[in-house]
Length: 338
Image (cartoon, rainbow, N blue to C red; front, side):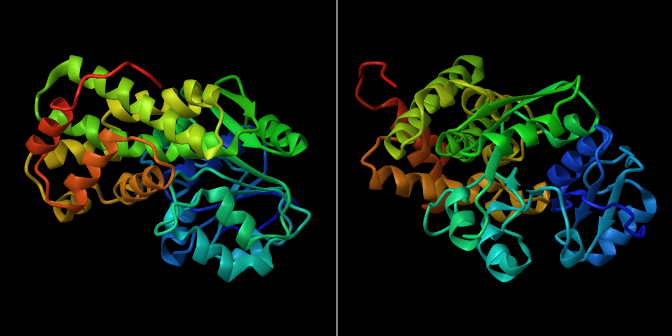
């Protein structure tokens, strides 16, 4: 690994596909960036190769991107911190390393998901484990890591209660091919980013069953209705779900095979087991864990989420896809409401 020669780099925590892509983008945007990963052998390999061949093959690292497997070094003096680790790992990661986070440094995250067992949004987990950190932000939207790393045009939403911190993030991320929109709705942005993964599994399944474009369009539309109902009940803003972090991310993950969750649904439709699907995908499939939490939240808030309920039944109750589809189609007719 290169010797650190940056004074106040942006610290990106998580050297998977998304963390690496964001680190590359920030470095391409003329910022000093320090990318941390928890596997020393992997960090040494990608540092030597100047490319994360496992997750983003063929995309070279800019000179201003450096790497480390030392969390103490990564958090020694960053200008701000961007976390891109799997959502289910946040509680333990932050709890074990809270002492390394300065109260003077803003913390943002680009992960999507709900805490397993509680259904808590990531900003709630961060606030509980890092009470000293007051500048918090989430970034979300229709983003595939490979396209960001290859400099294809992208737009995201950054949500924060701190306008100065969200402006700092926006200024650092913004480029001619990367546009940032600002919001104060952490609940809506985070729920949209998590919920869409469940619906993407459903979309992949109906496409895998050969049900056609009509079915996919109906599923996305009614899935959005579920997302909006639950989001508003939890305190999110209705307009958030009509933006990039809501319908934008939903369309992306439901319609493109770069989505691991969509591919999960397609593989299930081909008769693969969840164990086989996980092995073939080879990366975290957030929608599997999120399906249980979405259904539990919907019951807690007394909100109907029929599509998500059937995804849950398929994943956890040995319900066949054909039976799940039959249940959805045989429901009573109703007014089209959101």
